[in-house]
Image (cartoon, rainbow, N blue to C red; front, side, top):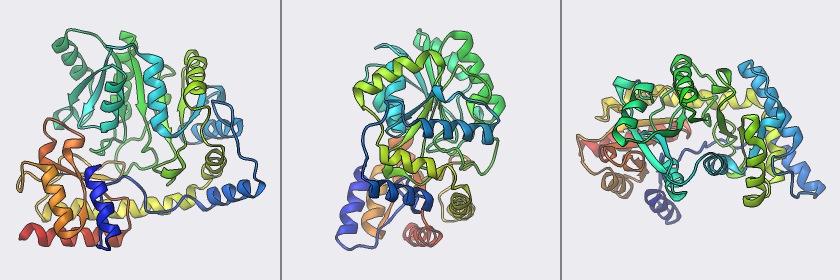
Length: 371
């Protein structure tokens, strides 16, 4: 976030900054979503909804799972949230007690660590690498339990993952779900980057078990980051407890965003055009980053990130990122955000922007690295 703040200041000062630091699509929300929001604003009656969200949106999301994943979900099990961030807060509060151990991947999304720690939970960060398929495995979870001497009460996995881009396929996902079920541990599946899988088997954990908390959002595939609307799919026994928490903490997700989200679910044709841009950017970076001296640390199977090795140039990715921004006006996220132990040698580059922006950023980086 420090690099992002510096990039914003530089842009406001008139510098030609290209930001590869934030996982935010450059495309706008789908036209149908914007038109639905405009119509709702013209009507003028925007207010609270039920804590679990508009019934029409919950039903539409259930239809999405039936079409895309062949899974019948009772809309009663779906909770609309103020972005995926609220979903994580609700899940952690509803599932765990202070001191419980929750396992996440390292490198991984830094907000997991921050939220869990703020709630008094013990974060077990488990290294994922080529040997583990860049994802959590039952074997790595058992090794972490043995080392800590305490049981793992929850497992949180993102697929596709940030920052690695890992897609955890059906077989590996099932092994994790089975491991959690056998030990009465909560399984939380972060599926926020679904729809942005370019290689591998995109599987929802709901295809494998009902004993899972799925968290998703309209931010990434649907290009609606600032609308702050997401959803959870819950086991039946958690619906009422989390509804009570949501009532107390958030009242409801913004009604305007929920109305827009209903329309966004039908905008797949438009959204897949944006997806094609990400796919082209991905192929470009897979080819060009190693050529300019930034080999990849993990496969770019999904999401819209490249996790690159900068150890040939620095042992301090934060200083490297700040210098790159200052000297060539290209912003990227230091790996230390995602991996406090080994992220000093990594840089995350978002390719959610336009093809022209990505090409220009790489061109600047190539000349800079040669110097």
